[in-house]
Length: 507
Image (cartoon, rainbow, N blue to C red; front, side, top):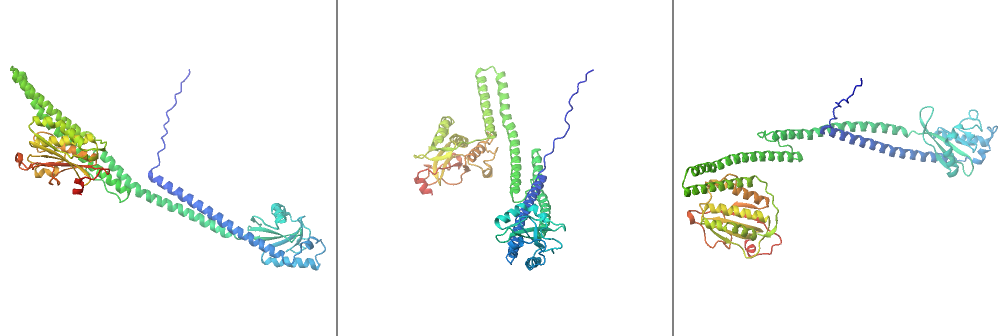
């Protein structure tokens, strides 16, 4: 019977990524190791090359000086066994023995690589004895015959010490003087290498400690901020974010604290908006239910039409409230461009002129004769003016709109003859859901402020008199039983604006 084998699922865990703390340690250790190893190798190479070059030069000087103290190459090449007692041989022998104060051993040999005379006694190293060790230095010997001198690389002797050979050609002859000296310069290099290794190890240890310390100094605040972010994400907003140091982490923590406060404020506004929505909608819904029920029960056609008209009014009011809430909740995106401020103001006034006339509200406008260029979104400028004019129309019977140029900014003023803003509301008039009217959600001025901030401008409840010359032909104070309220909005002007009389007067 055939058995079908099924592949087993791979239960091996995926490798966990390195933590930031470990990454810091790995980076610092790697950096310290590369720096220490590279620096040590470079120091070793430079020092070794310099010392070896200096020793080679001294060896050549020694061999050259010995060759110039009376050693005759042609004469030494003629030495054969049996001349050991002759004065010429003894003279050459004694001169080589005098070099033992500076070198360990010296030889004179010919092209056949057989010794003619050396620092050893002839009985120990007879004349014409082959110097077998010279076979290993063919390149150096060729260089010596070609250039007159050469030095070998260091080698280890039978006693474990390092030595070097130096060759020097005796005059124009084929005789070569070879000297052997210890390469003691490498002993300090050995100590230097040990020192560099120890220094590299110490550097690695210090790098590990520094990496762990720095990683902890950075990772611990990041871990705290991460926990704070998770707490904020879970809706636990009561605990403030601890402000870290004054560096980038400090700026991040302060930004997170501002975000936490912003979320709390936004949440409070949302709760208040939901409560306000429920409150504002409940009243129209109650009226709708009442008027609809009455319309169903009456048989009088005129009364039914009147009641249905009231239903329609309540529906329109409900729709207005919903539109205000949607406008407040919807993000505002501006597309500022350079334009004449008078154009969107005129467009807004044309929209409300007939409506205000039907309600018995007079509308007056005072616009400059010359173009007034500002940097803003024209559609949002129109919406700002509409909101302010409608707000003013609900407060009084006369609304005046004026536009002028002041200190590099375009100013729009909307003023009414109503009772004005109560003193206790002046500081909160632009907050959402703050209103002194019986109808409305209190979002109009909050929306105006958001639009102005989006366009880089500002709005304020003015306590200042109009600029000179006064755009108002007569005062509104005292009319309509109140002092009235004036709202001014300011838009950024353009550097391309030509100078005007108002600019020169107010500057």
